[in-house]
Amino acid sequence: MKYSGYAYIYTIGCQMNVYDSEKLGLILNSYGFERTDDVHKADIVVCNTCSIRHKAEEKAFSFLGRFAKIKKKKPGLIVVMAGCVAQQEGERAFVRLPYLDIVLGTQAFSRFGQHIDAIKSGQRRVVDTRDAPMIYEALPETACMDENKISRFVTIMQGCENFCTYCVVPYVRGRERSRTPEKIVQEIRLLAESGVKEVTLLGQNVNSYGQKEGEISFPELLFRVNDINGIQRIRFATSHPKDLSVDLMVAIRDLDKVCNHLHLPVQSGSNHILRKMNRGYTRETYLDRIFNLKKHCPDIALSTDIIVGFPSETREDFNDTLDLLREIEFDSLYAFAYSDRSSAPAARFPHQVDETEKRDRLNHLLEIQERYTEQKNTGLVGKTLDVLVEGTSEKKREGFDPVQEHMEQMTGRSESNKVVHFPSDQANIGDMIKIRIKNAYPHSLWGYPLELETK
View 1 (tube, rainbow, N blue to C red):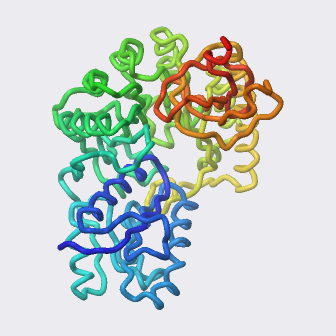
View 2: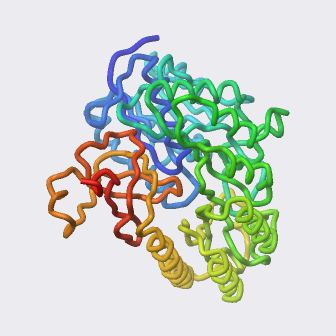
View 3: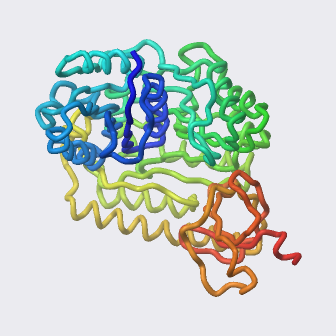
């Protein structure tokens, strides 16, 4: 059925959730709901949740908790919990949130419309956490859903087969399933036609794309996406170290649109902890992969994920992680103190690390990494980078050439995923411009367009 009204979608968590929220928005639009940024204006509110960390889960319950009072004043409001927490909690979600209308699991998107119909017809509650054999495809007639957005996420696969002991993904997103290359290429072509310049291909382990289905390999998919007119940059996440192939290294090296940047989560530098995590590789294997990668792509920028304070992690284990950091010198990293997820095996492991000790280790690790990040950024001063313009900058740098003081300060990203701020009165969103780097900061760079240097 078609309805009229407004939909508000609140997204928590990872890049995949951002992509999923766009799909939920397409479904709501097809049912007559128009997106709004005003939650009080909404006739249906969707919280797309994440359960990867306890903090994200509590954030979802906190957001949805606001609607107990709102729904008393507006009883026709439909409140939806979607995503990983919905999949994990099912019926239990109503214990904390009795005014919820729909609990929509990660594989239930194709049935979202019929659940809205059911609530509109008078049904009190709907819970759908059933599995789906295929990834739900929701391709719009045109992909121009958000003007001036030049970068988009595109999910190429869902689920995971790795069963890392700290991770809930296999339990809340199911087993690994890949989309067909034809559907992926079709979606990216639509994005390119609507003005998108950069796509990030998403999967829990993009390196195993298509293996179960007998489809093309991930490097072969990159070759196909590289041929799409209008797309200027291709990124991807996440690569699993145990499956990083030479073919992928060659694709990064040889394909002009694939960015010279790789996010390769290591999680720990200790073989003892890697075994406990069920990561499927050793410290030595990881270092060998990095060494081989740098042979093919000497200037590649590297980022990673690290968990500190995993159960039974000793000081020696932690020092092994710090040594790995010093050996590789990542451009950036995402680090987290371990927190139990009830459905993950590690929650039942003995020898939990004290919370204060976790925080101390995390702060120590971040302090060391910050020095490497600054060092990498400082090494770019004086160099010229190709920057894809994303919009105006909220960072206002003072003390530069007064000729540029009247200009708008813009921001964009380099191929190596560095944030770059610069002055310009001519740059538009989506432009690719050359910036000479003048200053480096802990988390960004500042420079001038080459055109200003010639004036």
